[in-house]
Image (cartoon, rainbow, N blue to C red; front, side, top):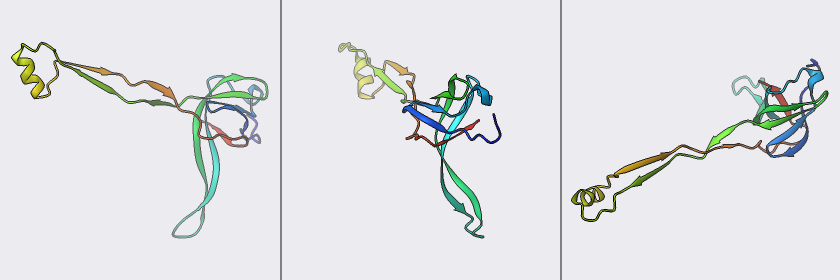
Length: 135
């Protein structure tokens, strides 16, 4: 990638996909990972008042899924879990004394644990001009 070219968002396709202003001519390959970020306020050292640099607000992480000569498509690659679900089942045999005791003590006769669903996390309000950095 050209040392002078700062990767930036050139187009927001949707909340999960953006187009960057860099492509294969800049050394971008399919599968490259990037973070999207927005430059925020300057942070000052509380003791000296010296500038520590600008805060980089992370908007998300993505992977290049398509590369053209001068642009590439970056799709969100961050995954979030929807949580784990536990289902407890009891035998419905009302004649069983064991079932009655188990019900009273809230002891399941069977427990099913469902794995969390994995869903993509969208970029956080990406806009044209936001920065990208290869990671």
